[in-house]
Image (tube, rainbow, N blue to C red; front, side, top):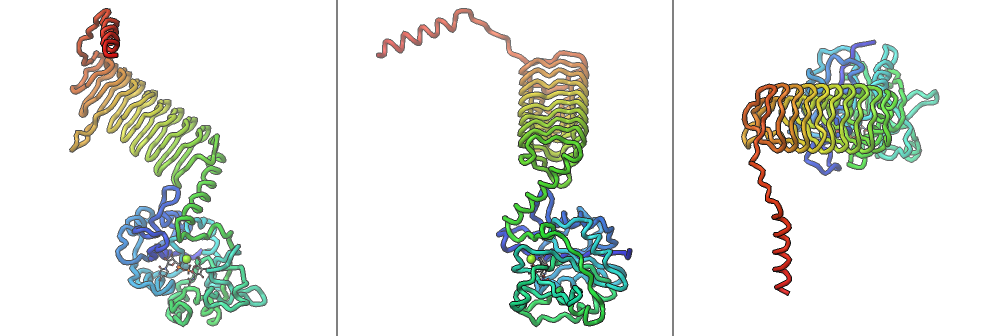
Length: 450
Ligand code: UD1
Ligand code: MG
């Protein structure tokens, strides 16, 4: 196969999203629309990738670089149409020789296999290939005009189509793969004499055919090329992705008791023999080992969970939570930027932030790491086999040595040496019979008032 380069059109503002965010920055399954497109296109290993953005879209550049560090950018200052947008990428690709794949940044469900298929359809005999689909409702799409032998000879935009052409249901997805040898010369010939007065990329097809180059047609299902123009479509994309991710999780050996209530991110990694109870949400950056149980109503992002661990119900794992093998994180426990080593437990009502809890330590319920004093964050370092009594406040920076025992209700402000007992506690004052007398006095007073 030829070497390939990528052009992603992402200059659209996304007016119909009613948002200050550039459209391709909207997220589905925790990943930007642009991120989905760039991930899918990695399969063809493009040697260059150029993203065409609009003015003032620096955040789009940052996002593209997260997926393709060597991405290049071209700014289209005026939106004069899709052919004009592709032209903006020309300086970056001037010296490139091979297949150029053009994708839309707001069409996130395209599969890597489809991109590879259209790239492979470009040969010396057919130097251009387009991706078509059968539309349930072709309104708004460019229609593919075929000759008697089924060869595509033109794409007609909806507004420019005549009544007969409008009845055609095979439509243009917008994805084109084309040899660099014909793209730039043909692009220079595209005019704007059409209903919108724009330079249409779709005119390339007719120009190629006139120049004697047959155009190959690859087809894909409509759902794969659905575009995101409004938030209802964004929700539909989310739904389709979740359906897919749930199925792959189950195919990979995870039990989802109520799959429709579990939400994954595009990059969630799950081992086998994992059980996920209902209503669990995975934000970006989660890796789950083997034989892990995630109990109902847990919210997990940016976390690694080791083999055999048990999380939840109602647990919250935030970025940097690193849960070791066989560790237990129970209900209403929040973990942030903390390493919980193998076999350690925090079973109830705790906040563990900026900390290390070494192997087999037990964190009693209500324990809090006081990691922030309003200006900086500090570390709490708890050794192995430590027992932290309930309702302890660990005021960081603080270290607790291996095997230490901390009495319930303590406020630990100094390092605790290994194997010692630490507790802060006022003396217990017990007054026998006090409560009974107190009740009598109160009752008597109440009676005398009536
Ligand atoms: C386009 C196709 C149509 C196809 C449909 C599929 C053309 C002329 N028409 O129509 O055949 O059926 O997509 O969804 O290409 N963009 C820029 N700069 C511009 C104009 C557009 O970057 O000046 C970007 C948009 O941000 C978007 C993409 O190109 O990502 C497509 O543009 P859009 O205006 O949505 O084209 P459609 O009218 O949907
Ligand atoms: Mg569109």
